[in-house]
Length: 387
Image 1 (cartoon, rainbow, N blue to C red):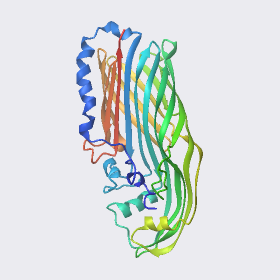
Image 2: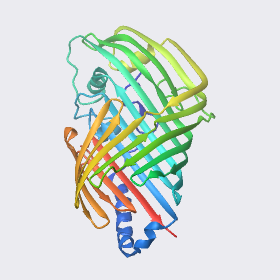
Image 3: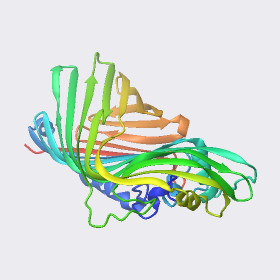
Image 4: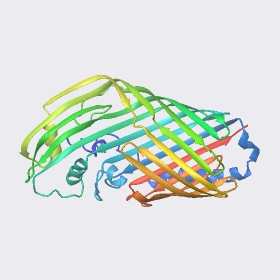
């Protein structure tokens, strides 16, 4: 069972998070330099062009129990209680025509929800933690959702009123990365390296990192769709409200997806590796293949802002099923440009947003040292009118 707890994806398959060292993120800054001069020299009349190209890159990663870099490297040192790890990543590239945008879409999502006991057991066994030599029962619960896909997306801006814009979005996904399931039960530590307990597993996958099921020659593929909506309402010159959903309705249908269901009954026994002990105790189980419908975790962003002259005070909520992030901000406008300072005080995250009719750039983190960061968010949206 060595790979059941949160370090699972770091063994024998892709890392838990698609993290990149800072040098590989300099491309975004080079793009900003390249287009900065274009924005000032391009005629203002181009803003009304009917045709154009656009691109969008958005990533948000959060680890509640340890810095992201330590989770990726499977070396949790700076541990704190928590129940959530996630990374959501998407890239779009396409063209626009009047109110319509059509583009290529690539996605990588990974979400882990777990009990505090699960996180602590993992930290004490694999990290820098020391397990007290006293009996303890750990309530184990781990739910994982991972998908990797590419496809096409369509956005349409519908403006029923001058102060109201509604944008439905539909995407078609072709997926080739799958991990979805859960483990729950009891892990018992009786002292002196004696472990026991009962764990139940049920998961679908494109690579079996627990029991190493041979899937050579098999291609695991899924087809899915998402439906989202964005609403932008400006009831007066001073107030603005907006809503953006993410995976409001979203499913991926997997054909012939491998599945493993197992029960590990571990009688108390001394061992230096409790994960292998639980794996060896999984004598009751079943491997199968069948259709599976995967639900991508729905989220939403809800915001409002008050405007007075060149100043505005935005407030945004990022709503995740198990957590709500609150982002107050202060913004100032100069011509067509807007500069905003962002914060999430509860996780000590701060950032910057630069806005323009053609460009939006957002960066937030709770630490500038990426080896210590638990929260990281980057967004780059670019629209270039052509004619």
